[in-house]
Image 1 (cartoon, rainbow over the protein chains, first blue to last red):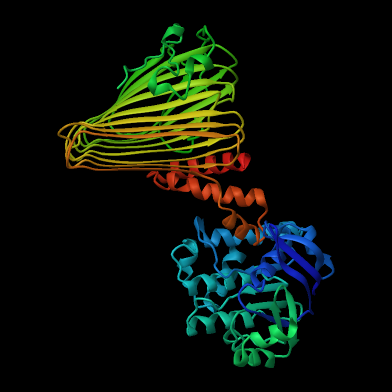
Image 2: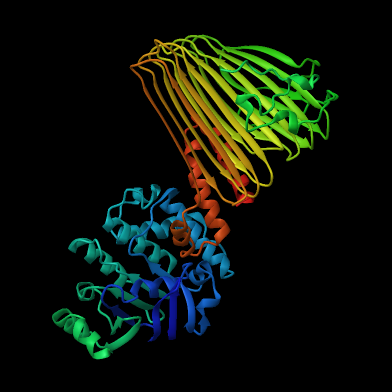
Length: 249
Length: 347
């Protein structure tokens, strides 16, 4: 599924990722944990194709296809989905229009027929109900005036509609109270599938109580310095990052 | 205030130049040829035009002439819908025409005014006047769609009466030089005024949206927004002036101009002006010119929307506020579709 080899990424003159290697097989959920400034957001933006992140060495492939050859929208059509830590507000574009535009743009890029309005509406209504979202919210400007929890739910709704192969969750728990966290995590868990992988990027272990990872990786100083099973997250919660970082140095 | 400009195409000395303060960003004399021959009449166009789907009466000028050969019409309206069309098909020469519209007391008129040009480097000059009797309502929607080589000016004088309501939405797409000017005398006395516009400019097109509102009496309200997009080497001009005369207390006037500059070589000149000679008033103006938000653009692209489509979506959303304020639903939908198509070809 996702294979990253010796990835080096710079923002301007500053190198942030310094030889990151990671393999996420199909159907697995991998967590990336790490201290502030480790390069967690850089990794997610680089995979999603944001401008300003320069890949100076290394490769990233999704199902064997080189991601860095593709633009952000082409990557999305191939199945990459980044759930933003801070989803943007887009005034004047109703969420429902945005969703349908995105869905049909992806289908067009893949050479599939557009989804008609009745089928789309049925699908989006069902997805909104699952996430306990008021359908009327989808008629408002995308994320405009939404609370932190509503914005994250909107991200999960987009995910459910777009059905990506690779989910990258960037600090999805930030700004969520415990009830919102549970609803969002249930939405993510419902997306688990044999042909879908997830990269859960988080600062805290808390989210991993709700979204259980198969593997946990520690990102520090631009590299993966330790990998293990779910227990590694608990160990980090108890001991902090310092000891691992010191051992890796 | 400058002396009113009255352009007579037969006399180039009447063409305003940048030495006229009100025309400093739009040099009509420089854009127009030195001599402009009045062009031959054109066969009346088939009824309809951009607003053909809105049921109503129609008056169509073809190369500046009505079917009876005249170039000026006086209209007294008891309400309803009027499509006022200026249809041009000419590669050179010019026309000048006009209309004086009175909306009777208590009546409500929807005026759908279109400039439908084909051909090329013609010069067009339209002079209009609108008078609203007490309690009258006029919604004026202006759609200007002209060839890139054309030079045109449309100048309207509007007088309101007590309790009347005038709403205007102008959509300008530019030409070699395209000026749309509205001058309103506002008596206060519960009259209300909305003056909105949008410009959508690409290529080397130039559009100039100029308004002057004079609050002459107490208790008047003005709401004004202009939104625009300029790309390539296009040039947009927004001049909005609000004058509050002595004694026009309790005036409440707000004006905004917000623009997107989508290319390094496009230019936007904005000149908002408030001239306040009364004490007890609320007046505000705001002006911004910026680029599309990169973060928002990336967010949309990360969901699979290609760059050009993402830009069009954001730009359309930006301009959308202007169309949302159009009161007549059928007309609003037509304007929205026109703007969407135009933006799709610009960004």
